[in-house]
Amino acid sequence: MGGISLDADANPTDWHDNALSEQIQQEERARAKAQWREENGIYQANLTPQVNADMYRYVEQKQAEINRTLGEKQ
Image (tube, rainbow, N blue to C red):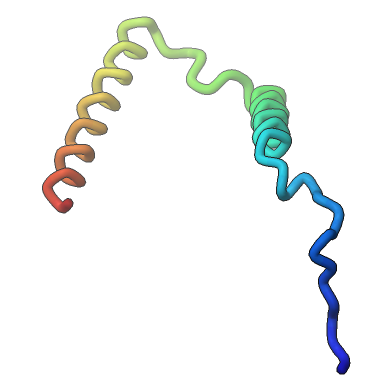
């Protein structure tokens, strides 16, 4: 009978090692973040402290609205 035979005792790979997979993801995120900063600089570095604080308050307010909306749907 033809076809592909999969050996049950196949060698494990990174795909099956969650700890290693998490480590690889963290390293890739750090690499991507460093590359972004190298190419684009620190995002919104020109904001004053007051504008930065206002921005964070706005984001928190919008996130609370989203959470309430999602809570009503469930």
